[in-house]
Image (cartoon, rainbow, N blue to C red; front, side, top):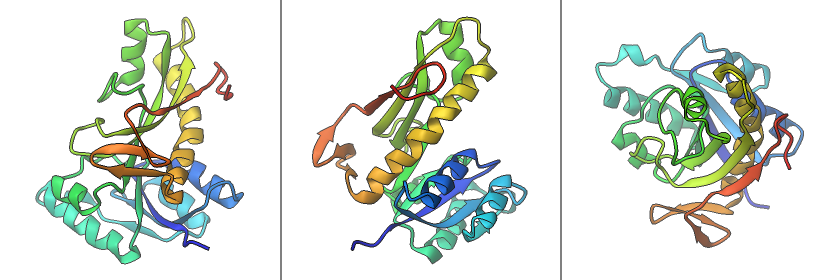
Length: 222
C-alpha cells in the first residue's frame, strides 16, 4: 500500500476549511495524513481545532522578522521537520516569497473565492454583485508567483441569488469550499493530479480548464 500523502495545512484564522479536512479524514473520506497545522498567528482558532484533533501544530509570528523572505525561510525550515509532500493554504494570509515557492514547487494548493481567472485579489463577493454576475464560486489551484494565477484544478459554481448581500454570498461560497477543497487535495495526494510544465495534469492528461462542480442555491451538489 502506498504511503499516505503527508499534508501540512497553513492557516491564519479560525480554520473552517481546516475543519473540513479534519472531518473528511476522520470519517475516512479523505486519504491524507495531516502531519502539521502551521499558523503565523498564535491566537488562530485553527490551532485549537488541530490540537483537538490530535494534529501537531507550529507557529511562527511574521512580525518577528525583518522581511518576508526571512520569515518564509523560517517557515520552510519548520515545516521541513515534518517532510510534507503537500502544502494546503487554508486562509493563510501571507503572500509567499519566490524562494518559498521554489522550495515547494508544484506542492502548494490554494483556494480562491472566485471563478478564476475572474476576480483575482480581494472583495470578490461584492465585485461579483456589483457586476451583476449570474454565477459565483471558488477555485482550487496550484500556487505560483502569479497571485491567484496558478494552474486551476477544481472549481465549484453556484447561482447568485437576487438581493443577497456580499456576506450572504460569501457564506454560501464558503460552504462549497468545504466540499471541493478536500476533494481536490485528495486527487493530488492520490497522484491523480500533478503540477507539470506549469500546467495541471489530471489522470495523465494536460488540462487548461478546471474540473467543474455545480451546486444549487443551497449548496447541494448537482
